Image (cartoon, rainbow, N blue to C red; front, side, top):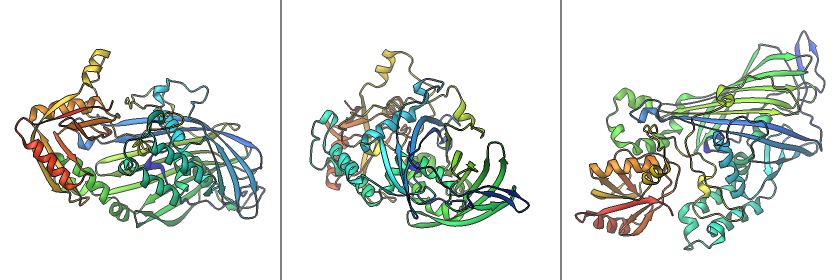
Length: 497
């Protein structure tokens, strides 16, 4: 439920006033947020992400991927004082009753189930401000201890080989970041809390229908400050339902946001060297431009100022790629009034096979936690060549021996780390392309002289026959390069057993 693309902690909250609404010549009075304590509220949540990397592939549109999820989450306001509230969210990865379509159409639920397993909890207790914005989380020590136990043990509780496994897989870094900022756990498991809080405030305000109100703030992107302009509008009211519909439009400053995304853009271009070196000046300039905008519709109660329904679309464009996320939240005891995007209502979607394996309920293998909260990369342009029969599928994912054309150690201009750059022969490049297309979303192994040297998750197909091995001592890389320069040297790639 979470993905990198969805972890944001500072939100603009509309100012709303008075505890009882009234229609007058001066506008409409929307009450401040005054939720009942001790009452459990259930919410239907629908999500989807659309990713398109067509620019980097030969077949336009073939690299697009859509993944969605449907959830039923519950929230209770436990207490409230003059400066804060305590909320409990009860979380579930199960599909709500009445959802049409097969479970395979809601692969985000499978990812979210693994996230709950990784964090070791199905409930979060939060301290929030009086608008409902999370600002502290209870039980962080228990969550971190659970994750450390998972990092130290393999599947089914078998101890992981090597004391440095957690460090090598990046788990220590992930856990350290969660300890430094526990609200990342909230953003990963219950981002609904902040979306609902967007339309709530303990204060109240008189607003006029159709009149826009703009403000601005700064967001931090890797140490760079990006100005964001927010525009609020009261769209309509419903005297019978006692609701008000608000809209919020946000846009990040183009120049500042583009600057903040340059490292990510450079990394992506490095992954497609053949395509990148043939770019025109205009194409290169276009790739280096990035944009981000967000549109939200909110239905707010004129009884207690709570958000009853919310619909959000966030679009990020950078480096020839487009990522669009959709979220719709509806309190189950209230009728829906907002129009849902088609991606959320479609009975069936052409979704990729992500091969999502459930984590054991008690333990998890090393190196998997960094895969839980992010979706795999979009499928390849050749995804239309799917395997129809079981025998064909087995053949498509059989181990493949690859002949090496060249192997050189060089310094990356992006990361400033040394890497082993391997170029395959044309015949082996074609075999490797077919292999990577067949195992998208799965973990693989690369062996040199029968020794496993890398266990990458295949997030995108490798089309150009080039492999970069990094994260290893330079002397080890040089030794492997020498082995691969021997005439007839081969690499074996296979699915991780």
